[in-house]
Image 1 (cartoon, rainbow, N blue to C red):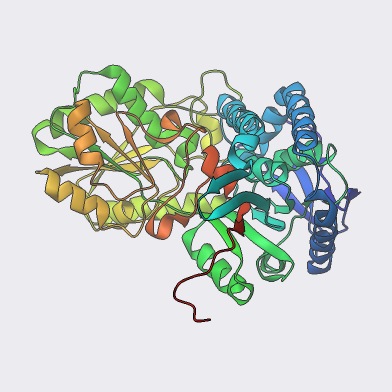
Image 2: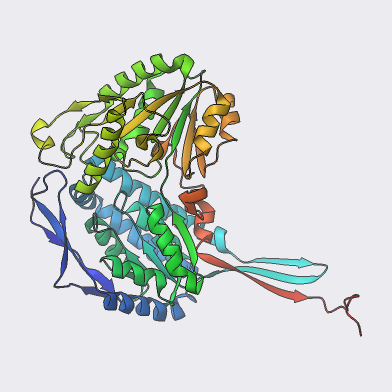
Length: 492
């Protein structure tokens, strides 16, 4: 599907801005095709956006919550009205299958609607009368939020920040990834058009833009989704002004398959395969390593391969049968290949999975055939590093203590999953170090926007989604009206 390239805008203080210098986004399926262009903003333009948000906050923080809700509802409806066009653009610039792009937007809308419906519940002041007097606890907006988002789920990982930030009275400057800036810019523009100038600003650019968004003293909160190493630089840049932060970072999420898992459960095996290869494996919360009890290991691998070969169809994202499209960019292709080659060179067996529907595309686009890695060592790169691509190792274990230790020794702790008889799986899950553990499902299939999501250890700080995700854009303000009585330990 070839179309004329589109150009999207930066948004600074309500104005749509173009720049002479552009970010070019190619089509991962057909890299010779240009999908579109985004502005390549400068540090000076980023400062202008921050200043605009800072000035807008002075009045926006006092706005009525019902007005904020009405504005967000109008934006939600406009996104719904344009969903087919946005999904098509997202699929073309990202490489994810069309159904996957549609699903990302559906998750975004689900969250935005939850935030609209629950912002009052999450932030309404509490007033307490007690023997020591009267206490009012309010949840006040923080200030200017800088949001820096990745390429794998650009719309949902932006709206997860935009909706609660604006609904709770903050202003924002958003910077998307240059690897998927187009569709998210259209969505951001739709939302920004419903709010006063300066409330929601959008810039694109390179490292100097990111540095400004994380170090500028007018930024009160940083909301970042991306790699752990990048987050370490962000924390250092933000340290001089002690900024509030929500960081959702990398993960090396494990799936643990217990001896009482039913290897003949085709639906469960399909869920496992999807949890490994949805979006070509480019999801922070995907199951990236699978540990299977040795007593069922051989049978599990056999049934897993059957399920994978049935579900995985690689090809053009717009082909109705395709479930796995290309990887987003060439650098990621090279990285995933390096992990697979490293495992192969150390003696692991590499098994290709699925069906290639468009063989002629494989050599031209950023395609990787999904692979299963068997016989890897627990310390091989493909096991301990986050692949963020369509390959997964399956390893045997002998007892629960061993596999729990293998899970918990990782520096990461975003999500995890345990597969088996429910009560047995719950018992193991309680010993797992992770922000979220799912039972008999994993990844997006087990995501629920009603509940908080985030990581432990080097997988992040803070939580998104749920009431906690709304409250994370507020500061708790306690106002005490004490009973005026003498304190016995203070001398007259």
